[in-house]
Image (cartoon, rainbow, N blue to C red; front, side):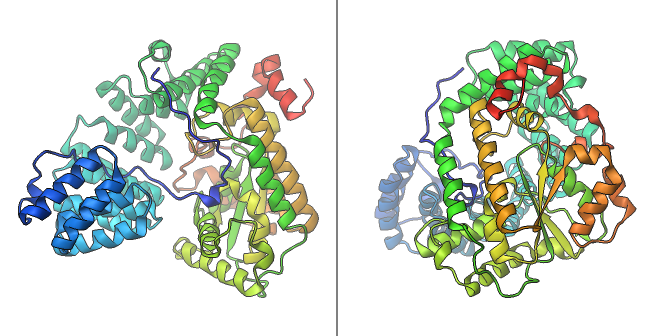
Length: 554
């Protein structure tokens, strides 16, 4: 396995981070770039120098050279683009976007400029703008598979999985042997519920690139029980290799652990999972104590309910689903989305973005400014959220938001959107915690990197949810997965009643609802309710360390 580079300890809450999709690749810099040949000699030398600094990742020096070049050729599209690249990589997205728009105005059909613009817009959270830019790039260069690949990724980030799949199919038509497009197409098919087609796409990717960790992770995540002896032997051999990147090693390791679990090798599955998470823990250096301090600060900031928006009905069109990962929030959303009045919008970043931008405006992080916010402030923030999510309510009156870490923001939700419904999705703590540890979430859930870390996160969650229940009595519905299994109809009726929705029998046949699901539960929610999805009990005493960390009896 390749060496890793440790990052700084991570305890930053989600609402302080930006949305990221994989950016459009930049072309390799060349000693002679024909795109700057038409510059005056001095400007050309400065632009070439800026390119070399970019190659060396010395972006401050690159910016200096390119700004000087731009002063000599203020409308030159390539100088504008190169300068935008230096700003983009330093997360100065608005400046990069402004420069790229100027470059695109000069050269409207330049695919590279449009790709760079799409990447910058995506990083800034403007997925509609990113899609338009990537689509323009694909139209300008339909024979370049990267253009279609980037368009597909943008569609996926916007939860438009059918369109994403079509874009990936175009990339494959251009380059049938381009395995990344096959992997991405598998992901889109999985989200759309086309599980067999997704498996075929992953298999095609593996035929082209047998060591593709992403393809193996996707295939095992569909249903590890469908892996045959040759698959398991291949995963075992890959996991034993020492020449994989850290990311690939972890993906392969967790896929192998799922295969072991499916074959009843629970001790080996447990050991493999913890070994992988130990690597992630060293790499991410998750700061559990820091995360606990943030949760405590939030509780203190909302010791009593904030004086929120004056309109008690503001936000009544939104249903927030919160909870720990793997606790049934995707299932709850699938049930609600089967209702004719509800659009399942998935894991949105709109609320974190609204709060992050407000924190930037005030120059202080949440929750430090809560005490200074007025009812008008909260109303403004609530209306901002509703405007950002309005696109999910064009065909249905209501929409969901299941960003799981919104449990930290219940106080802000109640202040900004007092009419919104909040559903706390719960599942057996051992089952949910072990499921989160053994699945591959990348850096999306940095706390899922070890037994103690996930147990600490769960304690923070339970403590803060108890606080919300105390100061907002009756405002949060606890939706228990095991209770749903015991009595589906009464629990579904209670959920709909809490959300102000009339009962609809379609919600009991949620698995038949045709919609995209882009979480790890995509395959499970396509099937009727069953207790067979529980796995923790099969491990027996092997999971005793996790039980102890969670405070559960052995």
